[in-house]
Length: 430
Image (cartoon, rainbow, N blue to C red; front, top):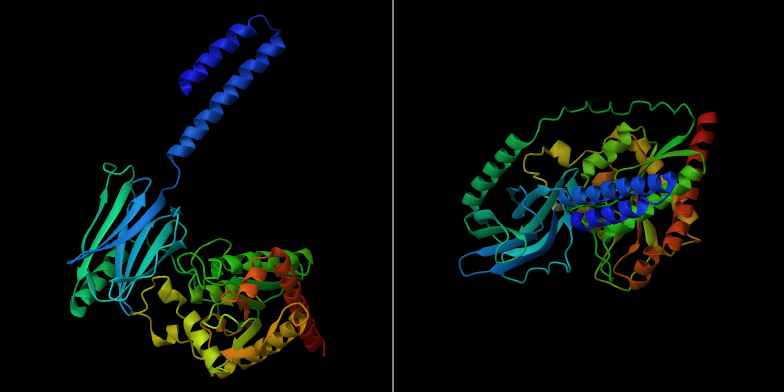
C-alpha cells in the first residue's frame, strides 16, 4: 500500500512541477492528508477490538471440549458457580461476530445452554449452564496454525459435587484477588425527601430490561427482548425530554448487563421520582398477546404473575452472578410499612398508564397485575414494570419491532406520566 502511495507521490510531484504555486500547494496538502488517513486506518486496524467468530462444543467419552475462534489472543478468567452449575468465562470487551446461534444442549449433554454479551465496561462474559458437576481439566489458547485464527480451548470433565464446590470457591477467591478495588459509595438514606431540580423538571428513570449477557426472551423472528426494550426506552426518553417537563435517565444506554439491585439504585442515586421497567415476555401459548402493567405486592395477583416474577428475578443468576454469599436481607428485600405509600403510588400510576395505553395497544384481560419483582423494590420511588407484549406472538413481536408502533406506546406512557405528576401536584397543593 505504501509503495503504491510512494509511486503516486512521485507522479504527482513531477506533474506539479509545471503547475502554479496554488496548484502545487493543493497537491502537497492532499498527499499529506492521504498519508495521514492511511496511517490512521492501519493503526485502527491494529488496535481493533478482538472478535469471536465461532464457537462449538464437542462431546467426547471422557470430557467436553469447548472452543472459541478469536481474531487475536486475549486474556481470560474462568469462574465456576453453583446452584445451578455454571461455567463462566470473562474476556476483555469483545465483538461477537457469530454466523449462527449456539443450539441448546440435548438431554444428557454436559453443556445445556449458553449466553454471552457485555457484562460491564471492559468485560464480556460467557455463561454456560451445565447439566452436572464438573471440573476444568485444561484451558489454553492456541495460536493460528491449522486454522487461520486463535482458539480458546476449555476441556471439562465430570466431577463430584464436593470437588465442584471446592473448585468454585477457589475460582471466586482468585477472581476477588485480581479485581481492582473500587471505593463503594455510601447508600442513599432510605425515605429521604428528594429535592426538586432547580429547573423544575421531574426526574424519570426508564429501565430497559435485560442486556448484555442476559438476552431476555427470544422472539419468533429471533430478536432478543434486550433489543426491544432498549429501542423502546430510547424512544420514550426522546418523547419525554422533547416535552421540556422531564429529565430522563436510562439504567443502561447500550447492550450491557446491569444487576437488578443496581437498576433501582441508579434511579435512587439520581433522585428519580418515577421508575418504569420495560419488558416483553415469551410464553408457550403463542396465541396470547397484549400489554400489561405490574406493580409491587407481597402476594402475586395470580399464578402467571408469580411465575413471571420468579423468572425475571433470576436475571442476576442468568448473568453469572454468585448469589451464594448474599444475605437474605439483600436477595429478598422486605416490604415494610414504610413502603406502603410508595406501593400505593405505584398502583395508582399503573392504573393511569393503562388508561392512556388502552386506545393505542391491545391489553391483557387482567391488565393490572401484582407480583414481587425485585426490580420494583426501591422503597421510596413509585415503580412499575410494563410488559409491552409477547415476543412469542407473531403480531405482538412484529409490532414491537416497528418504530412507529413503539412511538404510539411511548406517547401513551408519556400521557400516563403526565397524569401521575398532575395528580401529585394537585395533592401537594391541597
